[in-house]
Length: 95
Length: 477
Ligand SMILES: [Zn+2]
Image 1 (cartoon, rainbow over the protein chains, first blue to last red):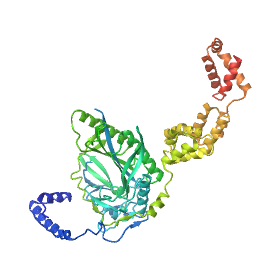
Image 2: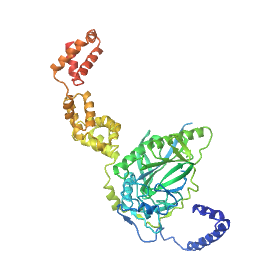
Image 3: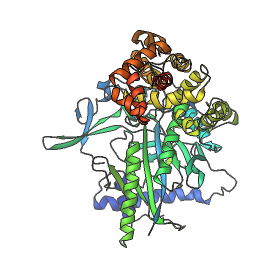
Image 4: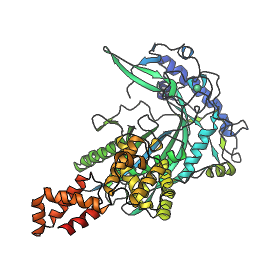
């Protein structure tokens, strides 16, 4: 499947990546090649195989509702680009 | 032209679990300082493994059972991807195509009789962080507290079945009561434990076509839901009436301005790229598990209301008020077990007691009047020890002082005077000081008697038996 430049730009935007024009073209080729490679799977006859979202044979993995310790706040905020009043500080967000 | 609305509602309810949805951080963040209930899992650090909180699943199943839902064989969690600073991971763990439960209903009253509002799905997800928007000396920025991120959040989605704002009102009251009966959510809207989003369109009355839908977000109070829907109905009707068209858009409710405002739509907002959460194996709800949870359901508001009417002979209206809160219904039943006249009990609770509780902002759990005290007071009233007029005063004193009725009646000398000779002397005094009224009555003016009885009551500070005062006055006159 050949991607269009617009599709690459859209995906890049969703991932918040700023791409240069030549990068758009380069990734268009590379991503198209990856998708084409995965297209091999379309040749398989999967009619008799039920759809699944999970390949490991696990289900109902749950834990009891018990609280435990959280991280010390200094560790939580250790990688904050900016902090203020024990909070992470980010650029203005409008709802 | 007359229009009718078509409304659908989404409710988000925080679950009252001890820990968060996928990690062991405490879920009750109300009193916690910012960013103290956070761990690598709810921060989404690389290499961590979320694990499903069993109680959150149980609470969701119990809610779904109370809402008459069915359960798909498999349920799974998915990642909903979008960029917003309230999401530490860049995605929210939610449920997309295989929710925990679906296809239920909740009944409301409509002009045409009882009506089922269909529930499309009840699913589980995680709450997001809290953002604080700051404007400080010309600088604007946002602060993030991640304590709320990862708190179990149940989402209840209806079909577009509401045909009036009043049906939405009833639905919210009923849903909130159910959640509180189940003990799965506080229902507290001020703290954001219960939040709403609505969508609404109009169509000419009687038409079967659908109009263009408008979504309204940020509905954090009962009032906001009702006001914003009414506002949108009026706005859309004016637009259509003027020959215009409703645009499909997302609005927010401006609580201060009492208007809906177009929200700057989040760019690419609908491109969530859901995919199965690879860290969480699917859930298979066994029949036995579901049935064991069904056995844990308490008697629910509708059933309790019907039972109270049948068992105690009270009105459906009173029963509706009494079953609004489980604790209130229990209080009523405790009183009714101690006093033979359940209707009188219901009256005193729905009028006097609720008024006192509301005006003093007291919960029924903290009610200073015990069921024993209320029953004792009603007995004093039945036995004629206190007059019906004074009972209200006695009751207020009981509420204020947290004491039993006998103590208050004795301390304040409120016992009814039923001794004829005592009242006779007071009647004579009243007649002597009000010769005009006496003359009026003798001249045929019946109202003069009411005045004189009032004077007797006043002279005894309400303690005289009104019937006796009346009788003695007539005789003397
Ligand atoms: Zn955590």
